Image (cartoon, rainbow, N blue to C red; front, top):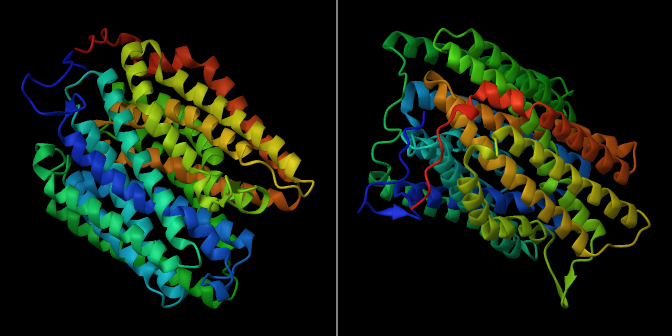
Length: 501
């Protein structure tokens, strides 16, 4: 897939030495992440806040369950978003639709008119994110279709810096606006952020140079008609089943979360089986997919640990951490922002390091290192929870240390995961496989939500340590098979990486 091209033609406008379209995607994703992470930083707190203070008044365990369902749904729907781009709309239009739906969701949550608008908002944000996320990342890959793999990795790392710049701003601004129970003002700020991102995306269309304009494998008219019938019937059946479940009086958040976890686990199994049997997948692509299965499972374990930031770690910050810093009590949601800030600072260094290293630091090795590092972060978390179990609020430095360690692990695994997904995706299913990458996050988040139930029967230090050991063990197993996976991915056959000018 590499052509040896090391950069854009001389005289062409660039963005940090990369295609100009990366600036458009960088900015759009930055503002979308502003809205997403800003709202996420206060969601559990809003759900648990008493009604007298403008919240929903839910128990913490229920709020964490809703959080897990919401986050998993965001990524579960990414597979459908990739399919729509591949077969019907093209990546560019699908991203546009997703941004509009996300903005509508945040506007709904900003309405101070009761819980119905909150649930509608969460559904719309999940649907819109499913349309936007996989296709935004796939569009980045389209900018590098004729580039070498190391430069693509570098571009994805810069794109990832945009994600974290948006997250940093969102986590700073939205929780601050929420102070004093101004929940809907905070949700309104998230809606405004998405509106800015949408505007930049529309205005920057020309910089994409036609990337994602048309679906790679558009459905025939007959196939499109069949799809509309099947989709309509499926939606009607699903809505009817859910309504009957609710009317039976047995529908609860915990049961719904369990069902979603089972579905989230079943969907990738079924989809991988479909890909391996598809006639549109070549033998060479099928070999790469076999390696991708193991990378997918490793990523799911990583996100199981990492994405507890918005639930378990947020509640730990609220309940067990001394948030007084230089005489100022900071909002609990601010603590996790050290992750975004650290990535903004060190992501360019990692991008340069990976670019110079080329294929000497393989993708499977990056995954193995990322897993071990995120596991070590929860070893630290286990110690912090042990200190707090005595009823004493711990220093904020414990959580800051956890987030800093996780940042390093994230920079090893996540940009590499986006890049390798683009690289190993069968041509006929390119955008869909990017959706499958996000499904690894859904699997990790949904299983993590179920795992949190263990806190009812085991002490918090044991809970954190169990997850830590699982991640470290997975990383060590991955390390044992780095050479085999690299062979399946054909990484060792890549040409030398050109020296950047």
